[in-house]
Length: 341
Image (cartoon, rainbow, N blue to C red; front, side):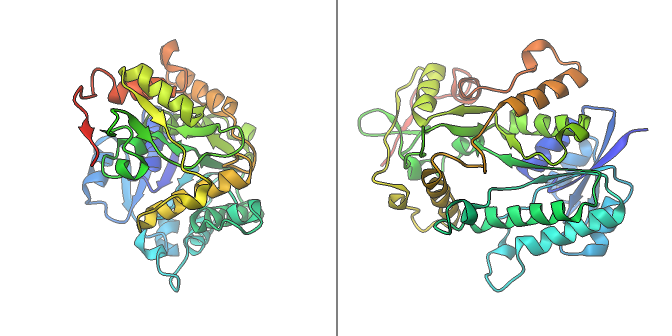
C-alpha cells in the first residue's frame, strides 16, 4: 500500500518541487494542502495526480484533518506571507507550532521541515534575520517534541531560479538580463565572506529529488540537518559558468566595503538578502550552522534516481554551468541583450 506524504506549501516553489518528484514514485501518495483548492496552481497539482485538500496553517483542527492518514509530511512556511509582516500579528513560529502539533495529533511518522540558520545566535546578535530565526525556532520545537519517528530539517541554498527575475536584475547590477555601458553582464553584490564559496540550489532540478531521497531512507537521515544544495561556487565561478554556457561577457563587481553598503532600494524582500550577506561575512562564509557540503544532497539525488529507474546521466545534481546553459544558452538566450539604464 502506498504511503501518503502530505505537503504544506504544495503550491509554492519548494513544495511543488517535492510534489512533482514524489508523484513519479508509486510507493508514495501525495496530498497537497492549499488555502484555496480552486486556485490555478492547486488545480494544476491535482491534474498531476495529487490529492488537494483545504486547510489554513493557523487552524489546528483543519491541519489535523489534512494530515490524517499520512505517513510523512513536508512543511515549508512562506515567510513572505503578508500575515507575518505585522510586528503585532501572529508569527511564523505561531503557525509552525500549530502545524507540528497537528501533525503529531494526526500520527505523522516522518516529518521533513524546511528550516533556516539561527542568524542571531551565529552572529552574536549583529544580524537578526526574522524569517530564518523563526524557522530555526520551529525546528527546535519539533526536535524537542520527540514525537516523530523521524524528523529531518533541510536548509536551502541560494535559489538559482532567482536569476530568472528580470524585474530584480537591475538591483544586482543587471546580470544576467541587462548589459552595462561596457557591454558586460555585471553582478554587483557584496563579497560572500570566508573563501567566497556560496551554496546554490536549483529548486526545479534538484530540491524535490533531494527531499524524495530522504523519504526513501528516513532513519538514515533522522535528526540530521540536510543541506539542500546543487552546486557550491564563488561569484567569480558563477560568472565564468555563465560565460561558458552563453558565450557572453559577465563579471562580478563586489560592493565594498561590506554588506552594509548593499542598497535595498526600499524593497522589503531585499532586506533579508542584505542580512544574508551580513550573516555570511560575519561567520566567514557560512549560510548554515556548518559550512555547506554537497555530498549528502548527491547521495539523496542518486537514491531518488535509482528508485525511479532514471538513466545514469540523471543521477547527478545540476551544475551551475548546466543550469545557465538550459535557461540562457543557445535555446533560451537572446543574442541582443537589453542595456540597463
